[in-house]
Image (cartoon, rainbow, N blue to C red):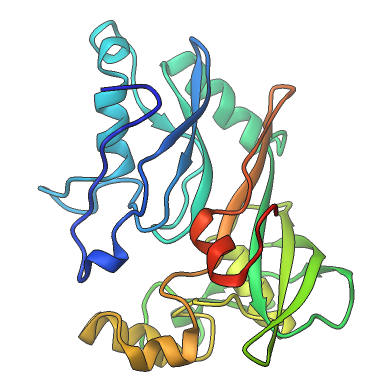
Length: 262
């Protein structure tokens, strides 16, 4: 298996929701490897028998290292639909070092998101705690998070990179820099700001979209409300141990909104 062209596959309700390209190696040393994860690729198996995950791909890619005492330790875990830069440690010492850096907030991350509407400001910060919605109210989706004063501290900086229109509707390309790492933080904070991420089935138009998708799979009715079949979120910048890696906006997002060169 090549370092630059790994095979990929993921069981899904539709071929349309399979990874559109294989993981791409961005950088590699004896300590780590950085890959550009495609959308619709799960990071870890969620149940016995799951295949086609990024973890599976990496175990194949790093088979030599594993045979010689190495391991696959994914440092920054992305949601299945989120694309972009992912850092993987190749051995326990590197994994421990990166995790300690994460705890000390010495790993900088930035994401690009396409949102509904035009934000009221060109730059703003959301400093709003997050907890699981089911802890304070009835929730039809167990994993759903929300802003609440009793939650864990969460802070994200946002900057508008571009405002544009498509088919008469307003959208914006936003750069998000999370200072903390809460579950679904960027998605929750953008929805809280009034500009949810395009394609977000849970925090976008309505959580009914998520429940409908679980029941029926992707459909024309969902496309009419969400525009695209995945949350428009891409891990575009990662910086650790004095090294910075970047990734342009994922090809599917750039093509869908005519954002070439972003």
